Length: 538
Image (cartoon, rainbow, N blue to C red; front, side):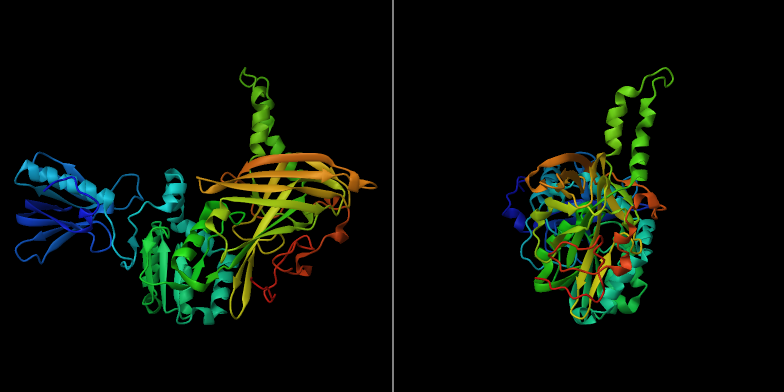
């Protein structure tokens, strides 16, 4: 048989006859005498190789070609192995057979067919078994570096990191409340859990009466999720764990509702929002629900002398002129800017904010994937106090727009701390403002292939006082930061100094805050959402 096969030929099955095979096992090899039929095909929805024992054809050995390698051991002998887990440093093979051919020509034809089926297999039809992977190149792989993806899935494949998220009781409790309080949205419905992790959200959906839940998880955590779900047998009957990326897997039916926890630092870090949107476009029925439904990034200028001095002092090491006889000062400027290129992740006192916050809304039900590649947010504030502004503070919240209850999950300063904390972009050159002075600028975020964003921040103070409306920019400061490389500073707010609070009565406490509509800027320093607020989603 000709080893150079066209794409059309690959749509059909392809048979070879081999003399014998030997099953490789941890104990001892098990030879199987021939003649044997080796068949390439895609009847299961993905490229596979089957060895059938003739004449009955009752017994078969299956190899998924997406994770199978073929090696020549000689002119008429080959080794076929299936790759196992990649969670260890060494590659593990889960099964293997040696193949004996009668003639060298048959061996060459078989190897040619193997390579063609791996590269060019065409999957017919759209109805594929649970967890089937698309044969086309992954959209995820096209835009994300392989090294970043490997580290990402390794991180989330570990139980200790899942435990860290599960023990964030603000996060987990908010999801549980959003689901259970809105059982009408889940009861009797098909649910897809996007990036299921430990499977906890799938179990919540099943508790709320979901007809069936497809838990899609690409990391090794899928195996743990399967075990956890199996440990809850009543719920497990309605949950299917699918190991793969949402960009690649195919499901047997559409979803009535998507549930996911796609939020990273500053809402957008790790770029999982894009996968959430792709899942929406691939799996969700028209007008289906998404939990969460809307995300908002909140931003306000802040003043924090302690933080600024702490960062600046890190570069003092490079001011040494006699470090073991070496002058380090040539690198001081570079080091200084380097420390200010790290966003600061910590929990801070909301009284450090010096102007009411503004918000940027991302509606997950309508946003396009491409809209998340580049986000440009114009900034405009009015200073409430006279002080030095050291940068821009950011946090986010998300809305679960249930039919029964609208539930918010917030990461705002002053609210109970979450594992996301808050984020601050610190300027290497602070700007001075007076009460009532206008502050303008831009927060420009560009996605990159390491699953994060490059942040470009510019803040400017405009002329103030009489004639300010005719005046221009008084001072400008900017910085460039990598959201992938934050400075994780601390877990709780620092002690607040009264010297930073010349007008404390103007600063609102978290319990006094109210929720504005989704499309307006905040009138308070922090837009603290209320659980019983009524928000209309367009």
